[in-house]
Image (cartoon, rainbow, N blue to C red; front, top):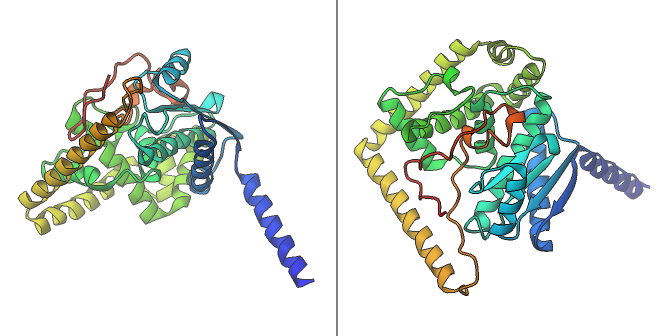
Length: 327
């Protein structure tokens, strides 16, 4: 009887967990890739729901087999052809390049997670808009895209006293490469700071307040006890303390030398890997793309107008430390 009761409990728990997952349909070139997509979605779903307080009823993921297939589908959707992927919340749709086009399997999951965040956030907002720093910060944190790039940008911003006001990061990010890098770093660290100091409930509260059409400063005050100005002061003070201390500890120049060395080694290894793949492929095979740069707000605006973006802008200039996109 005890075994039957335990089995019944496990079955009930598994059914409850499955019920929390959106209905998922996947179109991929191979069964193995489809299984990988499902695994990423199932692993990401609990955290996405915890952060946004909602989930889309269904998710459709399409993985293009090659560049031509992606270009054809993206063109039909009105998306930029060079994008790594895109999400259309009103259609519950995510369109992705294959891992080979992205430069390797390790690049695929972060792109998928980034697009999943847009669908979950749109479900939580119910047609309202979130500040761009919240959207990008959540996506960066979910996909694990922090590391040296964000730390370097934040340290440079702190040391040069060039942190960007949060009010300027609500609808778009700067076009200038250094400022754009700072905008992404601030977004990443601000969401991390909210989670550390106020917990997941603060994110759910902010999203719920925005969904009720409350002003951002009111949503922040409800979730953290601080309005936008006071929250910015507290966040900036923490960043100045944290990253100024980091710069002093590492001797300033040593930090930049180490960051430059890491970036240089990574660049050399990526290029060697690409050359090796090209030597091993037939002339008819498609050349793998360098990892596409994360789309800045204005680049997906035409496609994701429903998520609060502005249309009609061109692809951004290359950011610092990033390889040019292959055309």
